[in-house]
Image 1 (cartoon, rainbow, N blue to C red):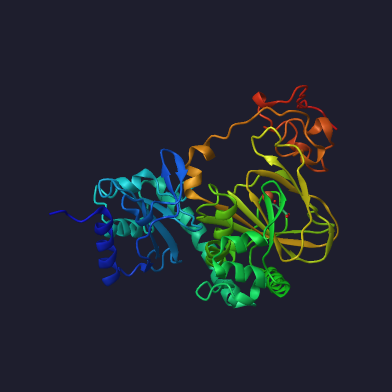
Image 2 (tube, helix red, strand yellow; image 1 turned 180 degrees about the horizontal axis):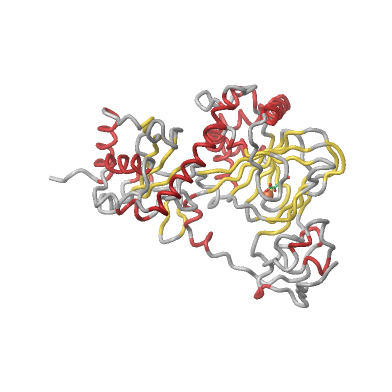
Length: 452
Ligand SMILES: O=C(O)CCC(=O)C(=O)O
Ligand SMILES: [Fe+2]
């Protein structure tokens, strides 16, 4: 007689947990086969139907102890493979969390897995995770202090979100249980998604340039409502987290309570489009960084050429009225034409542009009015683990870069061609691009001490 399969043994544990969940478990989804699997360091997709040999993923939501620093709902994913239970599942926090014992990818330090002492039952892992949210993994004065510091950062973030709950103008924008309303979307997009037809979706996509697509996303009244909510947050006086070091204006919407709502948008709307357009990078979107940028004369005007720390980027224009502010695209990071201009996209309110994060792009200066765009940087766990992601090959550039594609934050030859924008002179001499093996014939590096 055969014993239970790995899958059956995990499912039996899930059923038991559903029957008698610990207090800290908020919800537990059924075990499922992920969209992608990593085979021999390459992303393979889709996972074999039925998932007889794994991998499997278990998605759950839990919280830390009452009165502690992790009282918010925390989505967690456990990834199992066929070597379970000998091999522990990998644990991923699928959300923003500040915790000293998590690495940059939100995976617990190896010490966490050691603390399981070989007991890889789901129940024991959840118990250990609850402990992880309660006390330092490694008690010593230095770790105690860093654990507390991470915890306080987390609690401060949660506190801002909680305070804003009472002041939201449009609570529907934060209600991930009801989710995204049909009337917020451009009707043709909603119908294409509802039909689940790839052809219908494809018909809505305009290829603006190689690897750059646009499609109708939000209705104008939704854009207006969203902007009103952002202005309402600014007026609340609560601290605003800026999108990145290059933006003095704008806001990370995941920091004001929209993170779970963006999860829903990612899975219901962005995922099918990404899978259609970008078979590897977009096959399985797992996490996101979502923010609104804003530009107007007298404030930030545009954004230097760059690549995003995103696998698939969605960028939708919310308004208001403006002139200038094109989005200039160049080549893919590492490609011979990385710094050759490819296309200048003109934003249209409600319309979304989608591209790989590794496509070099920059926002041209606005000349009048005000522009606000909502940007979603999507990342894929398996794509980031793959060899293709980790080992970017840099080809030799064929010729000098297009002037529009030069980046003062990235390039070693910016000053050879252009004057640094006022206040940005300090970047001179700090560029890394192109790497020395990729220089075009006749490449000249700007000197460290050149002034203008
Ligand atoms: O302003 C835009 O439309 C693009 C901004 C952007 O590329 C970014 O924030 O990464
Ligand atoms: Fe960008």
